[in-house]
Length: 304
Image (cartoon, rainbow, N blue to C red; front, side, top):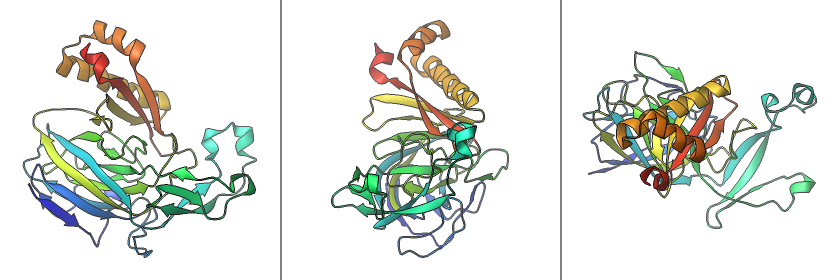
C-alpha cells in the first residue's frame, strides 16, 4: 500500500472519462490538494475555472463496472486561513413573496483558525459580533466518472456522486460509489470548513483543502447510488439526488431497501417495518440543479 501526494496543475469542471492524472492501486492512500469552489488554491491564486473544479481523475487499478469504489475520508484540512460564503439565503428556500424582498447576493469573508478549531466572520453584522463556530470540514463534491460516456457538471449530483454537499462527508466516513467506467476515475474538490444542512445559502464556508483519502474496491457489488457508513460507523446511509426533492428521497429510500435485502437478508415486509420506525433523513443540498437526500439507519437496529 502506497501513499501518493497529488498536487495537480489542471482541474476538471465535469466528472467524466478524462485522461487519468494519477494511477493508484486498491488500498492506496492519496493526500491531495484541492481548490475552492471558485478555483482558488491554498496560495490565493486562481488556478481553475468555476464551479467546483475537481482534482483528478484518479485511476484505480482493477476497477470495473459492477464494482464499487470505496473512499474512506481520513483527514480534511483547510489549506488557507480564509474562506468565503455567499448571502443572503437562496431564493428557492423561502416563500416566494419573501424571496422578492431578499437583498442582492454578496460574498462574506471568514477567518479559519485551525489551532483553535474555529471559524468566524471577519466583518460580521452587529448581531453576530461574537459569533464563533467550531470547524467541521466536509467534502462538497466528489465521485466517479458516470457510465455511458457522460460528462456531468460539478454543479450536479447524481448516481456517480458529484456535488451532494452533505455535511456527513467528513473525516471518518466511508463512501461507496458505483463504478461506471474502467478505472473508476475518481474526483474530489469543493471543500467546506463547515456548512449547515441543505447548503441553503448556496455555499458552505468555501476553502481550498488538503484531503487525505484511502481508496479501495468492493468487487462485484453493483450498487446504483452512493452508499456509506458515517464517521464512527454507527450508521449506514444511502444518498439519492434529483429534482423535485421527493424524487431524491425515493432514490435514497429505494437504495436502502435494496441494500437491506441483498446484504442483510431483510425482505421487503420486514424492511418496511424497520425503516418505517427507525430511518433518519438529511437534506444534503436544496440549491444545486439536483437536490440530495440522505437516508440513514443505525447499524445496531439492523443487526437486532
